[in-house]
Length: 150
Image 1: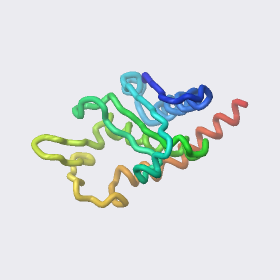
Image 2 (image 1 turned 180 degrees about the vertical axis):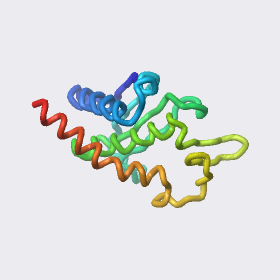
Image 3 (image 1 turned 90 degrees about the vertical axis):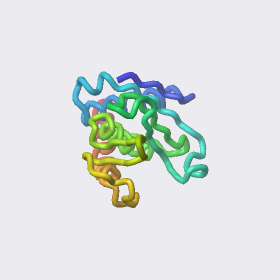
Image 4 (image 1 turned 180 degrees about the horizontal axis):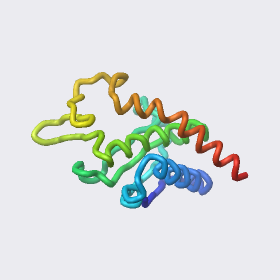
C-alpha cells in the first residue's frame, strides 16, 4: 500500500503510516494491500466544520476502487485518532473488496453485498455497524502491539 500523509508532525505521520499498514494487513489480502493508494489528511476543526471526526472517500474509479482518502480531525487525542483511522480503514476494506459499492450511473445508489441500502438510516447501515464493531478491537490490538515493542 502506498500511503501519503498530509501532516506537519513527523511523529504523527510515522504513527499513522504504521497503523494504516498494520490494519491493512489485518483486513486485506497481501495482494489487495499492495495495490491500495491511500492519502491521509489531518484537518484542524473538522468536527466543528462537518460534525465528523473523520471520513473516508474513494478518490479514483468507483469500479474496483483502489485509490482512497481518509480525513481525520487533527485535534483528536492519539487514542481517538487511531480508533478513527481503524474505523475508516474498515470502509477502505469494504470498498476495495467490493462489499460496499457507490454506484453513480444511471442513478446514485449505495450497495452492501449488492443489496440496495441507499435509503438506510446511518445508524442502521451495515457497513457502519461493521466499522463501529471493529474499531475498538483493532485499536486495542494495535496499541497493545505498539506497547509490547517498547
